[in-house]
Length: 177
Image (cartoon, rainbow, N blue to C red):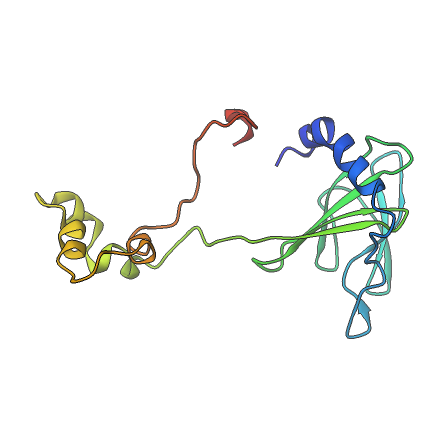
């Protein structure tokens, strides 16, 4: 992800959003007596971040870890409210954390879907070669031979997950993918 582009294009809006939420604070949130997010103590002009997590205070640069948290970027669109961006890569359903020195934090849970599947679970038991070399549409014939209409989940389970899409939207360009 191009954090510099994000910082230059979206951070004023995001910084404004964070600063507009005076009650947004989860720094005191505890799990089994321990904070579940790092606490940002300082964001230095050199984009170094001093943070505390699990009783350990460390100065970090982009890409370094503190416990399960990796410092991804700092966003300094508003000098009064710099933001550190952390991400938890230890699990598929981890979190992204946007945290400021002022104690404001925004936790965004990630909802990743697998980009792989067991080959035996695909194509209703047929091999990909068998599907491509058939003169008939094997999958369509099997679905349409059933008593009921095929449902979306049943059809979607035949194919591998989409790993990358090359699409153009009004939000981004091909450079964003």
